[in-house]
Amino acid sequence: MIAELNALEICHRYLRGMVRRSGVYVDATAGRGRDTELLCRLAGEAGVVYAFDIQREAVTATRARLEQAGLLPRARLIHGGHERMADHVPSAHGVVFNFGFLPGGDHSVFTRAETSLAALDAAAALLEPGGFLALTLYSGGPNGYAERDAVLSWLEALDQRRFTALVCRFANRKNDPPLFAAVEKHP
Image (cartoon, rainbow, N blue to C red; front, side, top):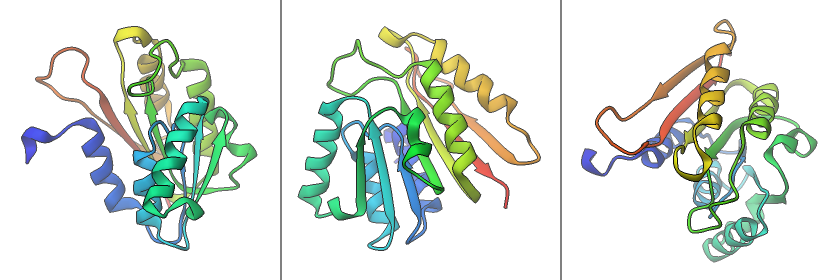
């Protein structure tokens, strides 16, 4: 139903179309583990999912979610910044980001432009040909607009000979609705 459509649902629909079994995927902002769980399910038993978060609470919540679902063996949980993903991941078929703050968590802790741009650079560099980035950008409120604007500028600056970038926004929703963006690396 389209009335229920939000940026997270758009992202999950995109992931269902892009993730292939036995691939390597990264959830760059694990949060409560929803994207990590979906990636583990879609990548199957032979797939591997790396999940990063700077908040111990997020890593703990993701671990509990995956344990309950029986998916923990498919994931590598890393308590650390997503800008360091290249230290842990040799290459990936896809990387998912949710920029903003931990739902239900401390809203004074949120992703920031400096580390997010470094993480996007790292993700683009380790992306396999034909791979993708899926980004959901939450802005306004405590985290403001600096990160959103920086990420949008980063997307616009991508080399169109190597990447295709698409940004989706809700035209009629008030109060800073999230944006979804997808980047695909050309084969």
